[in-house]
Image 1 (cartoon, rainbow, N blue to C red):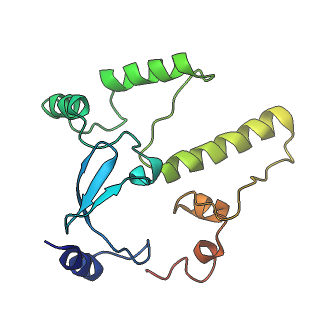
Image 2: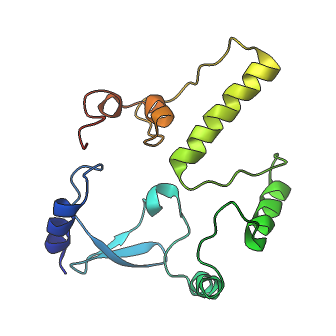
Amino acid sequence: MTNAEIKEMATKYIINTYGERQIALVKGEGAYVWDADGKKYLDFVAGISTVNIGHCHPNLAKAIAEQAQKLIHVSNLYYIEPQARLAKRIIELSFADKCFFCNSGAEANEAAIKIARKYTKEKINPNKYEIITMYKSFHGRTMTTITATGQEKYTRENRWRAF
């Protein structure tokens, strides 16, 4: 399929929450991606910095394939060794003593806001509860993170446009 064909299908079947998009990515290698028309790009977006590890590295592809032969996704209702190992490594490299794993950036930001407010209320001053965010920021689409987002287009009339 071409960029135009993919765009036409997506426009018909997907709620437009990201505005006009011009290209459809079909493959990646390292820091580069290619669109459906074969044009090569340097990937500066990296999944909006959620998976900023490049594309199709042989070691990563091998690790994913090996894990896919065991388990693909497991609810946080269960313990799994890779998650426990990752938490241990994060703690060893950070200031924290526990990890919180979640499913999205919005969920992570919402948890960070709640944890910061709870800590401040209990340890510093119960009257200090405001969160300061940056102009033109974007923190996600949950009720809390949309409120913290510093772009009026997300917090006013367009907030529910797609629905």
